[in-house]
Length: 176
Image (cartoon, rainbow, N blue to C red; front, side, top):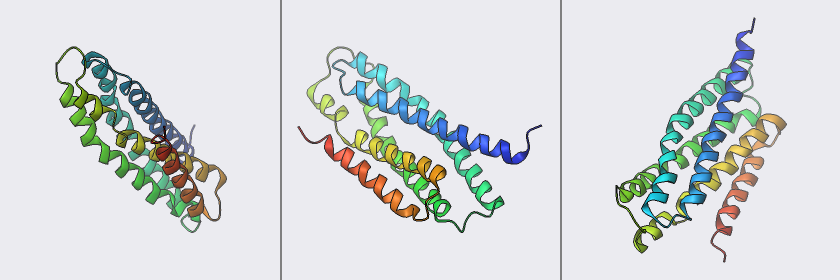
């Protein structure tokens, strides 16, 4: 029989897999949305966005709750790798929430129209803010996984390094 500790560790890992699944779905949809030239193509790629809160929200809550419970139960709050995890996780959630209204506006703009996308709408769906947010969140979530595995003494520097990498990765999309 599985004890509570193992069940919570399994829940924590499965929830992180869920977060990365939502991130992968979002990343693929953004990549192909930028290539869309018609309303129909754009609607196909924005349709998967309904999966993001359905997968991401429960995964985020389960990951956060199980992580906090495990850290409390095991007395791990004195370690820097656990102290940085919750704030970084909150930053990831906020960064994801900030682009939610933009995604909604894009979906509303597509409506039930057909045919080629007008230039103004092409500009709107190709703006870099969605991709920038995605790259930053991907970097920070990767940092959290490294943090959980490596458990560095100076975990804040790990998070800063990954955050900087995310920013550089985001800025690189602005280059020709």
